[in-house]
Amino acid sequence: MLWIWVFPLSAGLVAFTSFVFPRRKGPLPPGPLRWPLIGNGLNLWYKHPWKVYARWAQEYRSDILSLQIPGATIIILNTEHAVQDLFVKRGLIYSDRPYTAFFEKLGISRIFVFQDYGERWKNNRKTFKQYLGTEMESVIRSNELSSSRRLLVSLLESNDHQMEFRQAVNDFFLSATYGVPPSQQGEHVALTQESAVLLKRLMIQGLVFDFLPFLTSLLAWFTTAGVTRGVGVVGDLVDKMMRAPFESAKADSIQGTHRVSVAGRFFRLDEESSNVSNDEEISIIDVLGTSYAAGTDTVVALINSFALAMVLYPDVQRKAYEILDFTLCGRLPELKDCGTIPYIDALIHEVVRWNPVAPLGVPHILSQDDVYEGYVLPKGSICIANTWNILHDEERYGPNVDEFIPERFLNADGTLDETRAKTDAAFGFGRRICPGENIAREFAWILFASVLSAYELVDARDKDGKLLDRSTIEYTTEIVSSAPHFKCRFSLRPGITEAMIREAVRPVD
Ligand code: HEM
Image (cartoon, rainbow, N blue to C red; front, top):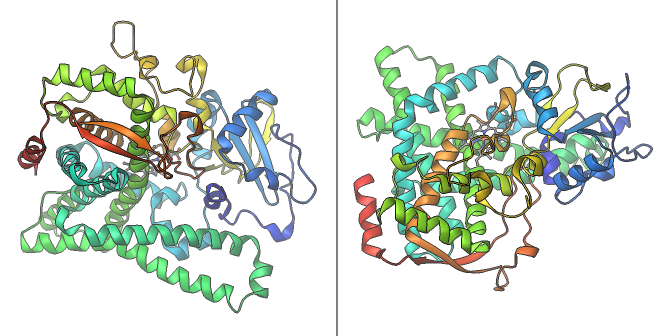
């Protein structure tokens, strides 16, 4: 539960030792009772806070809420309307990020998700568009297809589909971005996982470090030493995680053995113009590393949520594979089919909406004082869009929003309802909106359609071996919220054989 606040609060905006609340220049939006000294400090530790904020919005009859803790104001925007007004229409002042010197030491300020709205961020965003935008579509698409087909093969033998999903997503990023073939991906995946685990642990330590410097000096003899040592290790690991696949692609490119990839385009430009500066190389390393880091956990969470929906709602699963069988006449899907089967498009919208991967998005920071609906929002406020609430709006998405019902996005004649089929809120807002949305949606399309064409997901059980029960399912309370761990059988669908699956990998490999 703590983890969801680690990123925004470790921004060093909160000087707990000073016990100071920001000076009020006018009324703040409503919120729960504030206690002396700690303000709303006790209101930060809820399970699924997005549901609590949705309830408060009803109780206080307000689209916008506030929490105050020593040194920081948190603004929660509960409706699409409020988010559009602030993050989009006033994007110039609502696009900074929580930032801390500790992030700099950890080396994660290189990941541009965490960078302030300034020149460095703008250049990185431009580079992302240049290298992962439409020009590279064919490399990205062919790897989306081949990773999905390889996943089908690995599911033949594995009894841990969640591990295979993660492997498939790593496979896609490492192949498409750096041209690393599946046989050489192991060390890069291990490095990424090691950095992620260490980062998570250290960011919590860093939060304490930032919050309670007086404690740090008391316990300096071991706390400081431990954190400092950890910072060094994680800083090196993040650097290695971002640099190693790039360097291996570079070496292959020099030897002429490089597979087509996004990094390959950079080497080609470098070769043609011979004037790529060191700074440009660092920037491309950071941008490619950022997409790998930002894309992996999110897409894995989306696929796990898809699998959970399929086992909890077997009628939806059956309908989806019957429609795929009917449309594709028994062949496996390809990317040219993407967008041509409305029920699958609706299913993807529903996976994105039902339990959003980032239920509170990524916090934006307000860079100057602002006034909205009569409330005064102070400079430096941590602004959160309650994406979960926006995607559970019954006026927009119809009744039973907690249930998984792809039909909510379809017209009576089975075509996609273009006015309702909008779930972009899941990918953030305004100038910081996720630049990987198209990649995520397309990869999800080919993955979900491939899995459903080949397998039926049956006999789902929780970690204790009990049959899954819809009423007890709980997603995690983290920035990236994940479905609970479960096991199920991937049973080959009638007419699909092991040989067909193995054969289907060859033409795309
Ligand atoms: C299901 C998949 C995904 C979800 C739900 C998702 C969601 C998000 C959200 C909510 C944000 C913050 C937006 C904001 O601040 O308003 C974000 C940022 C970002 N995402 Fe994604 N994302 C996904 C996949 C991807 C993929 C596949 C990539 C890369 C190929 C990617 C790259 C990024 C980057 C680089 C940012 C930082 C943008 C910035 O700060 O300017 N994401 N994403």
